[in-house]
Length: 468
Image (cartoon, rainbow, N blue to C red):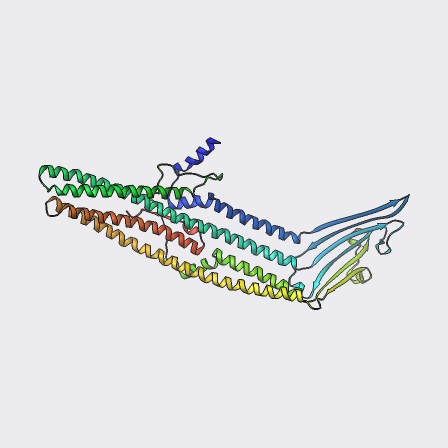
């Protein structure tokens, strides 16, 4: 057990922690994703149970009585019923009754009595009934469960992408802070040597020391934030057996592979994604379930009539059944009618079902509009980040050029250490902004996934070098 736990804890040591690889793993092993899949399977099982209402049914009854040497009766009755999705049930039966004392209406010929026929609802119940309504609602419940599972996975990936972006930014901040400390320490040593040689004023060493100490404090803070972000990302990692996995000590977000995706989605693609959005599908399925119940309730208000007809023949062979022209001489038929006189219960249920269907249709329209607005906003955010990345790269290059020029001026005595530090701080700030944009980009892509309800947007990726 201890060995298995140790393997689970170190399993992430060799992971490729690109955003796409991280999200793929989250989708396949995270408990939320696995629970969503179990809910989907449960709904499929419920649908299978509902379809069982149309399974053929074979029944048999044997009734025998003998007392004081007298065989009162020996009766056997077997029937096969085959339901259909159209409300018509086909029936095949064979019965035999013998004995000294039997009910005359149960009497059959010696070889038994074969019957074959069907029962059919007349009137509005041809449109729908309880079995067909239950099946339709189970089908819609499966669609709703599938949509709910997709919505949970999309939300999970949105959070995972956001936290991965925060981790990437935190690690980048820590690296940039460490680079800043190293540069400040190098410059402090150089200034001290120049002060000792009399090339610069002693005040410059105090300026260099203060800058170094300031950057050391920034590095401590950046490292603490990076550790916290690492722990958050570690909470998303599980192995296929359902055991938690911790990030290895040296693991870090991949610096050479970031997610990219063409954000220029056309209106048709957005409309299609919104129509298939999990929340929209879920709201639509619930409305259709309520509408199916409304139709069934409206049928129950009206009179119900059903008819049953069966041809009869002595024996057990289907060939013994009479031809259609002679069926009128050997048949069994029945008619049942149900008419609610006041129908207060049915009318009350109908009004409630109509109001419920109207309520859910309004909810469907609201959800679809909200999803569209959120998707459009997510697209705007992502395109804004993509537009900023190009400009940030140019600003970063310009800051590097300005620092190099200021450093040359300082070396020839035309500038001061204060201006060099200011240029270097500006460069470090621009590098931090570049890291922030990459983190915002990952979060924006996650938001787009949740807005469009399409986890595949984050899993179908291209690889590009990150902006430094």
